[in-house]
Image 1: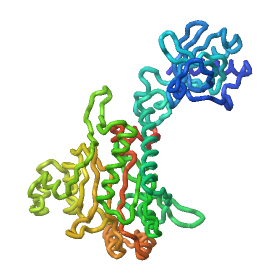
Image 2 (image 1 turned 90 degrees about the vertical axis):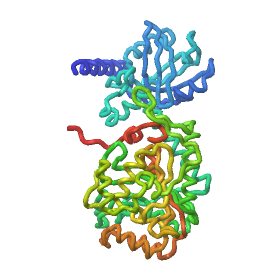
Image 3 (image 1 turned 45 degrees about the horizontal axis):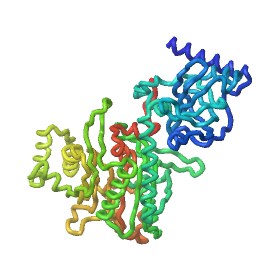
Length: 482
């Protein structure tokens, strides 16, 4: 702690020295011909350039200096000699530290070791860093610092920076993929008077001017379906959802979701769309259908093979693969079997929830490669269309990859009377929880449609080989410091 205090004091002294020399330590506009990583990527010797970045390495050789300038595009080496920039500028340079932002102007050249570099003719101070950066070689290892001070993680850990750049590319490619197929992007309310579209605990607030309680949305589904009623046939929304529930390596209170609807389609066509899209993302952004998940030592923990076609299996058949006579057992026998396998089954849950618990623990969590689970019990999905051959089932898929649900897809329910009955059952008969405007909209006629949801955070986790949702969300929610 004392050493840190001394370092801060030295940097403050250098700040004062800059001010005394009449140099603004926090500069203004600085026009560049390219960013550091861009100049390195398109390097051509003997080219005049202007660039700017953070000093992330410094090799002092007396009157000559080699430095790395870096930003999110990468790094570029610069070479500065006191004779080239002049004594006044050299004195200013002595007040700089690793972490400072500078702009440089000069000419590209290649060093004797073959390193693309810039020979600096002049430079400008753009921002003085008053705190030392994390150790260059070890970066930010403390997960508390990594998640609470993401900027330090991005500065010092290229791997983290790479994950978030891939996330940007994934979201961009999702938009492009859907728009090329005729889907248009829609925006729906984040604050709703009746939270709907999923069974989850919402966040609540109050609007003073309207005098009403509002809820942060748990899903955009019911508003997007209003758009289907209005005649918009192929729509999607990339949105933030909010659920006032637990936090874990797979859950964050706010998360990004893709929802898309396609009039006159069904769940099987939507499954094919999702398979094509995820394979496109793997090939375009990641560069491979095989995704390796590694530990901190770089050892491969598991490989996910996304090579199409993906497997499709019925929910009941998957349950039978675990326990062949499951559907011949009584509810009491099912509970007894679960207990014998070490599955913790609450005494107050319904029989279909016992089956779902078996599915989650013994099928879903053990499935690594893509699997479309189809034809689920209607109790699990109140917004999906019943199967025409078996009214105990609904026409849905649940895409499982890497032991977790990545995407559900439905043949959407468009019968207003059946929809009302399903929602009433889900709400336990509390009619004040029903979205009457949505139900009224269905009475004007919603075309048959297929719909999908994809958790973007989980999708990015899977595609980038990360194991915690906090590693793919820039600023995850954390408990306050004690």
